[in-house]
Amino acid sequence: MENSKDLTMPARRDMLLMTAKGAAGLVAATMLGGVSRSALAAYSLAPTVTEGPFCLDSVANNLLRSDIRISSVTGKIAAGFPLVLTVTVSKLNANGTISPINGAYVDIWHCDADGNYSGETNMGAADLTAEDYLRGYQITNARGAVKFISIYPGWYTSRTTHIHVRIRTFLGSTAVYDQATQFFFDESLTEQIYTTISQYLSHGLKDTANATDSVFTGGSNQSATDGITSDSGDHLMLTLANNGNYVTASINLVIATSEGVASLSCPTVADTSGSTSGGGTPPTGTPPTGTPPTRPGG
Image 1: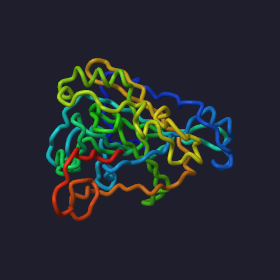
Image 2: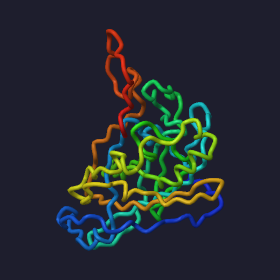
Image 3: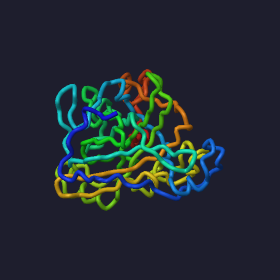
């Protein structure tokens, strides 16, 4: 179905439904209910990776919107260089062809220019629990496509620049497919943004490259199905273009709906009972000394 909340996109409307990235590792055809080895050679399945500790359920929170820059709670606008993102979701069929999925729910979230997530305390670095910007979902149209307007993500310690993604299909109100993955950015464009755009200058350059990021270099959580045992990020790179006023980004995700429903930890609100994204009783006693710990990766 067409999403009535899709926005008219700026300028270039031919924005790219790229063909699926080819030549992934081959796995046995029986793992995909009869999908042939040649099909997997032609179309790489999107790797499944961690949803991370800052996942909140945008569907349950009714954040159906194309422009995710504005907090629906306070009206605050996330500052940063505009990013226009197109995501296409297709299904790998048993006969080796792909077809767009109409009606898939695509939920995205990412940090702001300073490396903080809305809806979270960010390990005490920034209490943004009253905000919900840079989060939202769209429903794919007949072409399997959704469009978002956001900002170029910032970064935080131990992680390269990325966007979190969750893809779901429903039968009635029941999720019958649920996958988490992440999108990654070209290093040279990221450096250009971080060193020339005012909102990113104070935070500086990121401390983790794609090549040393644990998620980017790691394998898929569903490697038995998709055959991706390392370097998941190579299959999740966005196609990017900077036109001077905003960056366009696109990716085509090919999925195998036989993978089913994952057990994702995505509540509707963050647990703020402690200083981290997890819950529990705060510790007592003498505070520790030394270098503070970094936030959990994800």
